[in-house]
Length: 291
Length: 281
Image 1 (cartoon, each protein chain N blue to C red):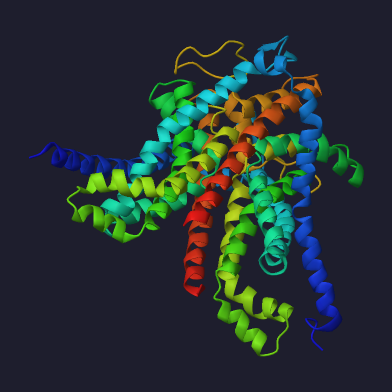
Image 2 (image 1 turned 90 degrees about the vertical axis):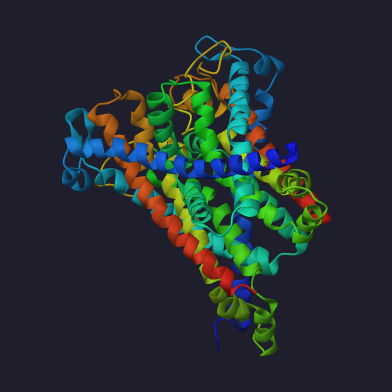
């Protein structure tokens, strides 16, 4: 056998081995997060975790609801701002903006996505918190609202690019048929293009939500770090992700508190798995709609 | 009369245009703020000296070096591995279980929150493998996080290469690996490169995956081996803006400016490579 053939066979096996190793990586991520998280439930009750109303690890209270409330309020604010803005922006750049404006917009929106979360956290801490404090007459601007506004900025790039792709991917016959029937441009957008692009737009919203719920550093820095169940947009909160980041530094490895953070990791895992599966389903659906 | 006609139409269309512009105003404002406050904070001393007096004075040289080492290590850990996985998906596999599994896992890996990668890195690399908090543990954690982007970029660029190119090469007697290495991969380089640049931009800006696996709070000297801890720009910015009292603003803005220049710079480079490639295809 020639050396070329040997090399070819060798690379074939190497490439197969590397591809199979990906599966091992994914399983080990699952395995290590789950086994560590499960150890928490073997020490504490699963009901106390999921229905517990207080999170004070020092007093052995691991109730997860206050953290969920924190993630909930931050997400509500972030989605409330980012979904409508992204829809308008996507319609604007795909249908109204000129070619040049469109290019500039796309670059700016991508650049927005490149801002590290710790940078937005800094802006929230030193700029936005003061504005929010004065605007609502609060003692501190470090609230769920502050985190939500910043996370909206992070979700907008994802939502706009995917919605724009979905609208642009539609066959031009949709638009032409509608305009030929005498509908004006706006009627065409609202009644023809947006419904046809809906699966793609919805997938973008889901992926944006994935970013919002998984974001850590920004919310750690700007939401005031208070795991309180009775919270709202204008109170300090603590999200699921921020709890892991804030407490991992102070735990003893191998104790109950350490494992409780992995239990939160399991919940985050489950949420991101669900969000991605739904988004993936709608992305495939939107490819079928596209011309 | 419908709200989508006449006056209603004018109002809604004006709203679309205004909101479209509003959606990018915050990013313009943030950049203006970063440049206005950040540029004056940059000096040669700031870039070339180590931190002094509890990080309140001096520069961020070890921090920049740490981030650079983390980024290079991440590239080494993820790029060859990611490209070869992409090659497997497009060039070497039939529609078998392994291909379907990998495609499914990429979608889900891409959505896992970065803090969960941090948890995994801590449990696996730092504790189970005994690497401790170290440069190598951080690079491996960031490397795994970067894989989905690199694999997807490789897969999409390879899929865009016409079949005739491969057939011509195989027809003159080249082996499959020779075809892949000398014909297909070079043709797909711009797309793959864009993916690598974008994932590097993300890895350089991430804090959550390195805060338990690699990053040091304060380490005035440079790391000597891959099992040392390092300082890193994003974690350093987090530390000095939340954990150190009476931190001078110029120091924080300088760090922030350097960090943003790197991540946004890489991102613009990625956009440039992609646009250049688009013109030729």
